[in-house]
Length: 140
Image 1 (cartoon, rainbow, N blue to C red):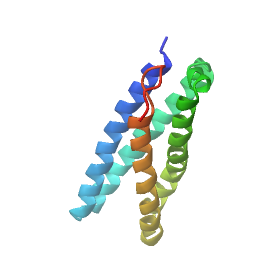
Image 2 (image 1 turned 30 degrees about the vertical axis):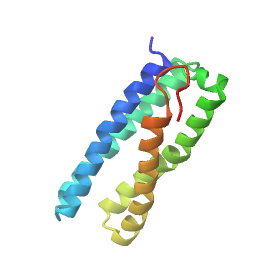
Image 3 (image 1 turned 90 degrees about the vertical axis):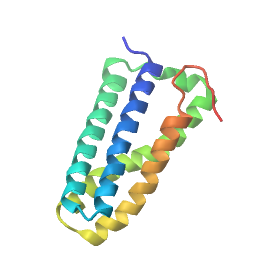
Image 4 (image 1 turned 60 degrees about the vertical axis):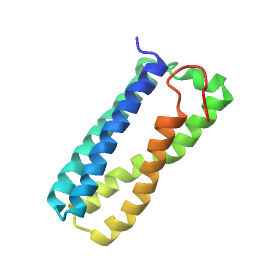
C-alpha cells in the first residue's frame, strides 16, 4: 500500500507536469495562438482534476489514515494548511476559468486568470517546497 510521503512525491511530479503545461499554454497565448491555449488548458484542467479526484479517493476512502502524520507534527500541519489556502481556491476556480474561456467571456476570464495565476503560483511553491515527502519535517 502507498504511504503518505509516496503520495506527496507523486503529487509533486503531477504538479510539476501540469505546471509545464500551464506555462506552455501561456506561451501559446503570447504567440496569439488562442485555440492552442484553450486546448492546452483543457488538458491542464482534465489532468489536474483526475489527480485531485485520485487523491481524494485514496485519502478519503482507500486509506483515510494516509496523512495522519501531518496531524501529529505542528510544522507539517502548518505547511499543509498553507498549501491548502492556495490549492483549494485554485481548484475551485479551475472550472470557472474553463467555462469563461470556452464561452469567450474574455473580460471575466482575464480577471479570473490573474487571480488563478497567483493561486496556482502559491500552490506550486507550497506544494513543491513546503510539503515534505518524508514523514519527518524538513521545513524552511
